[in-house]
Length: 149
Image (cartoon, rainbow, N blue to C red; front, side, top):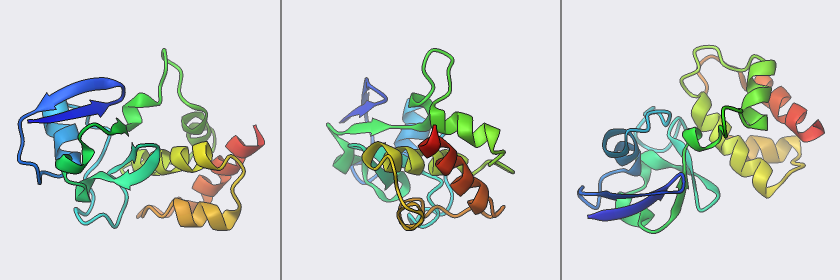
Protein backbone atom coordinates (compact mmCIF):
# COMPACT_ATOMS: atom_id res chain seq x y z
CA UNK A 1 0.00 0.00 0.00
CA UNK A 2 1.42 3.40 -1.01
CA UNK A 3 0.25 6.61 0.65
CA UNK A 4 0.37 9.58 -1.68
CA UNK A 5 -0.32 13.31 -1.43
CA UNK A 6 -1.57 14.44 -4.84
CA UNK A 7 -2.92 17.95 -5.29
CA UNK A 8 -3.37 18.25 -1.53
CA UNK A 9 -5.47 15.09 -1.21
CA UNK A 10 -4.39 11.85 0.40
CA UNK A 11 -4.60 8.61 -1.55
CA UNK A 12 -3.84 5.05 -0.45
CA UNK A 13 -3.16 2.88 -3.47
CA UNK A 14 -2.46 -0.82 -3.60
CA UNK A 15 0.17 -1.17 -6.33
CA UNK A 16 3.59 -2.72 -6.79
CA UNK A 17 6.22 -0.32 -5.35
CA UNK A 18 7.98 -0.20 -8.73
CA UNK A 19 4.86 1.00 -10.59
CA UNK A 20 5.60 4.31 -12.29
CA UNK A 21 3.89 7.24 -10.59
CA UNK A 22 2.35 8.21 -13.94
CA UNK A 23 0.21 5.07 -14.03
CA UNK A 24 -0.90 5.48 -10.43
CA UNK A 25 -1.94 9.09 -11.10
CA UNK A 26 -3.87 8.12 -14.24
CA UNK A 27 -5.24 4.66 -13.42
CA UNK A 28 -5.67 4.52 -9.64
CA UNK A 29 -6.30 8.20 -8.84
CA UNK A 30 -8.12 9.03 -12.09
CA UNK A 31 -6.31 12.26 -12.98
CA UNK A 32 -5.70 12.03 -16.71
CA UNK A 33 -4.18 15.44 -17.45
CA UNK A 34 -0.71 13.95 -16.99
CA UNK A 35 0.09 12.21 -20.27
CA UNK A 36 2.10 9.18 -21.31
CA UNK A 37 4.59 10.04 -24.03
CA UNK A 38 7.72 7.94 -24.17
CA UNK A 39 7.91 5.92 -20.96
CA UNK A 40 11.61 6.69 -20.42
CA UNK A 41 11.50 10.24 -19.04
CA UNK A 42 12.73 11.87 -22.23
CA UNK A 43 9.73 13.73 -23.69
CA UNK A 44 8.21 15.37 -20.61
CA UNK A 45 4.53 14.78 -21.38
CA UNK A 46 4.25 13.16 -17.94
CA UNK A 47 5.80 16.06 -16.00
CA UNK A 48 4.37 16.71 -12.54
CA UNK A 49 5.65 18.80 -9.65
CA UNK A 50 7.38 16.64 -7.07
CA UNK A 51 8.18 18.60 -3.92
CA UNK A 52 7.99 21.72 -6.11
CA UNK A 53 10.38 20.49 -8.78
CA UNK A 54 9.47 19.37 -12.30
CA UNK A 55 9.74 15.58 -12.44
CA UNK A 56 9.01 13.03 -15.16
CA UNK A 57 6.44 10.75 -13.54
CA UNK A 58 6.85 7.87 -16.01
CA UNK A 59 10.29 7.07 -14.63
CA UNK A 60 9.58 7.66 -10.94
CA UNK A 61 8.51 4.59 -8.95
CA UNK A 62 5.54 5.13 -6.69
CA UNK A 63 7.66 3.98 -3.73
CA UNK A 64 9.80 7.13 -4.14
CA UNK A 65 6.69 9.32 -4.07
CA UNK A 66 5.28 8.18 -0.73
CA UNK A 67 4.77 11.10 1.62
CA UNK A 68 5.96 13.64 -0.95
CA UNK A 69 3.93 16.56 -2.28
CA UNK A 70 2.85 15.86 -5.86
CA UNK A 71 1.03 18.37 -8.07
CA UNK A 72 -0.55 17.60 -11.43
CA UNK A 73 -1.96 19.91 -14.10
CA UNK A 74 -5.37 19.58 -12.42
CA UNK A 75 -4.04 21.46 -9.37
CA UNK A 76 -3.41 24.72 -11.23
CA UNK A 77 -6.99 25.83 -11.88
CA UNK A 78 -8.51 27.44 -8.80
CA UNK A 79 -12.24 28.17 -8.44
CA UNK A 80 -12.78 28.07 -12.18
CA UNK A 81 -9.80 30.34 -12.91
CA UNK A 82 -6.82 29.20 -14.93
CA UNK A 83 -3.34 29.92 -13.59
CA UNK A 84 -1.39 32.82 -15.09
CA UNK A 85 0.66 30.34 -17.07
CA UNK A 86 -2.41 28.57 -18.44
CA UNK A 87 -3.93 31.94 -19.41
CA UNK A 88 -0.73 32.91 -21.21
CA UNK A 89 -0.76 29.57 -23.04
CA UNK A 90 -4.25 30.37 -24.35
CA UNK A 91 -3.46 34.01 -25.18
CA UNK A 92 -0.28 33.11 -27.06
CA UNK A 93 -2.01 30.18 -28.79
CA UNK A 94 0.65 27.71 -27.67
CA UNK A 95 -1.19 24.39 -28.08
CA UNK A 96 -1.60 22.86 -31.49
CA UNK A 97 -2.37 19.20 -30.86
CA UNK A 98 -1.97 19.94 -27.13
CA UNK A 99 -0.76 16.51 -26.09
CA UNK A 100 2.55 17.65 -24.58
CA UNK A 101 1.20 20.87 -23.12
CA UNK A 102 0.28 19.71 -19.62
CA UNK A 103 3.89 18.64 -19.11
CA UNK A 104 5.19 21.94 -20.49
CA UNK A 105 2.84 23.93 -18.28
CA UNK A 106 4.02 21.98 -15.23
CA UNK A 107 7.70 22.44 -16.12
CA UNK A 108 7.06 26.17 -16.60
CA UNK A 109 5.17 26.34 -13.30
CA UNK A 110 8.13 24.85 -11.46
CA UNK A 111 10.55 27.17 -13.24
CA UNK A 112 8.63 30.37 -12.48
CA UNK A 113 7.90 29.42 -8.88
CA UNK A 114 11.62 28.91 -8.29
CA UNK A 115 12.92 31.63 -10.61
CA UNK A 116 10.37 34.37 -11.44
CA UNK A 117 12.70 36.10 -13.94
CA UNK A 118 14.55 33.37 -15.85
CA UNK A 119 16.82 34.07 -18.79
CA UNK A 120 16.21 32.40 -22.15
CA UNK A 121 19.02 29.97 -21.31
CA UNK A 122 17.34 29.07 -18.01
CA UNK A 123 14.01 28.60 -19.81
CA UNK A 124 15.63 26.26 -22.34
CA UNK A 125 17.33 24.27 -19.59
CA UNK A 126 14.21 23.98 -17.43
CA UNK A 127 11.51 23.46 -20.04
CA UNK A 128 13.15 20.65 -21.98
CA UNK A 129 9.92 18.94 -22.97
CA UNK A 130 9.53 17.72 -26.53
CA UNK A 131 6.75 19.12 -28.72
CA UNK A 132 6.27 17.42 -32.05
CA UNK A 133 4.20 20.36 -33.29
CA UNK A 134 7.18 22.68 -32.74
CA UNK A 135 5.49 25.28 -30.53
CA UNK A 136 8.73 26.15 -28.72
CA UNK A 137 8.68 29.82 -29.76
CA UNK A 138 5.06 30.20 -28.61
CA UNK A 139 6.03 28.56 -25.30
CA UNK A 140 8.85 31.06 -24.85
CA UNK A 141 6.48 33.93 -25.78
CA UNK A 142 3.95 32.74 -23.18
CA UNK A 143 6.63 32.45 -20.50
CA UNK A 144 7.85 35.98 -21.26
CA UNK A 145 4.26 37.26 -21.10
CA UNK A 146 3.92 35.78 -17.59
CA UNK A 147 7.27 37.27 -16.54
CA UNK A 148 6.19 40.75 -17.74
CA UNK A 149 2.74 40.57 -16.12
